[in-house]
Length: 331
Image (tube, rainbow, N blue to C red; front, side, top):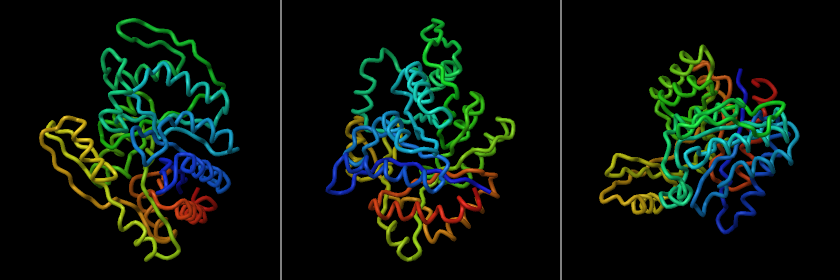
C-alpha cells in the first residue's frame, strides 16, 4: 500500500497574476488537507514570470496556518543559494510553530536562470560544495556543530519540540548515496528524470546504503474520468532541454526560456531538444494501477504527485479524483 502527497509550483494562469497563483496554491493545499493527502510541498523557482513559488519557506508558513493536519514543506529549498545556518533557523522556527507538521526538502539545482542565480549568490565570497553545505545543515538541525571556513560553529537557533522531517531531492545514484550517508530521506525526481534504469539504480542504491529504507517517488500526474480528455489536456505540454557547450544541460518550460538560459550562461554554442512532458495520465483507476505496479516493483510506500500546469479547476479536479481510492484504501 502507498500514501499520496502533492507538490506544487504555484503556476501563474495566463492573464492572471501572482496573487491568483498563490491563492490557488493555498486553496489546493486546503483541499488536499481535507482529502487526506500526507504532505503538501512547495517548489522553489527564481527569475520566472510563470511561477510564483520563489520563497517556499514563506508560503509554507502561510499554508500551515491555513490547514490543520497535512504536513507542509519545501520541495525543495535550493541550498546552494543560502547559508545552512539560516535554513536550519527557518525550519526549526517553522517546526516550533507547527510541531510535527513540517518537512524540509533540499535540492541541489539553482531553480532559475543564470542571472537570477548570480543575484542570489552575489554576496558570497565563494561557492561551497553542496555536500559540505548539506553536512553543515545536518549538524545545525541536530543542534550540533559544523565547520565553516575552518571554524567550528555551534548552533544556538530555536529548538523545536519535533524537528522537521528531512528529504534530499535528486535523480541519480549519487544523490541517493549522499542522502543515505547524511541520514536523510531520499525523493527521486521522476517528474524530471523518468529513465527507468536510472530510477532503478537510484532506488536500489538508497535502499542498500540506508539500511533498507524506502525512497519516495515524485511523478507528474493528471486524472480525468474521461481518458481521452486526460490525453488531450497533456498533449501540448512540452519541456525544452538546452545543452550548453560546457556540458551543462537544463530543462525549461518554453523554448524562449531555454534560449535565454543559454544567452545568460554565455554559451557560444548550444542546442535545444523539444520533448513531450512526462505526465502519468488517464482515469484515476488506470493511474493507480500504474502506481501500484511501481510500488510493488520498487518497494515505494509513498508518491509525491505534481499536477501539471493546467487551469486551476482541472488541477483541483485531478487531485480530488486521485484521492478517491488511495486515501481510503491504499494509504
